[in-house]
Image 1 (cartoon, protein in one colour):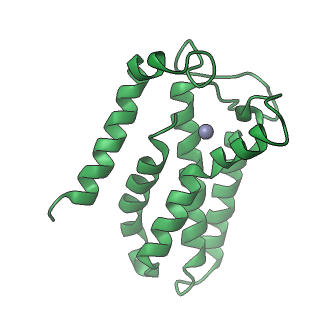
Image 2: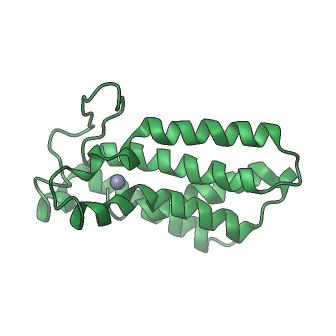
Image 3: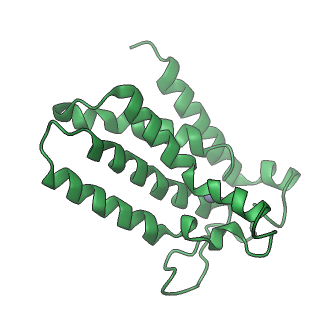
Length: 164
Ligand SMILES: [Zn+2]
């Protein structure tokens, strides 16, 4: 997925910030860490285009291993559990990690993700072709997975601009 990650991060952060009212995280910091988490896995593209020189698909990097993000999420749970309610930092770690995990799920709609890596190198995808690599361009925008992306963008816009 390309365009849906940041709006998805916005949606998840906006919906989850209410769960932490007792810790009163700073809204802007919470949104910042959440949206950063939603695009953080794709920062590996810099490595892909520069150092790795296109040799391995960027989904085969640690930053696209769901178990890596799941580990971060568990660590943030521990931090939340161990820390007192005056500490907002664990809430930022939590929203960062959960958005990274959401990124993994969304990428599974448009390409292959190694859900059990590094233990098993079996790729998994909800679609039959890898939209991110094999059929970029028109195919990407005419594939049903793009409707999901449009819906995410619409939802984020709805949450941002609705009158409440
Ligand atoms: Zn990605």
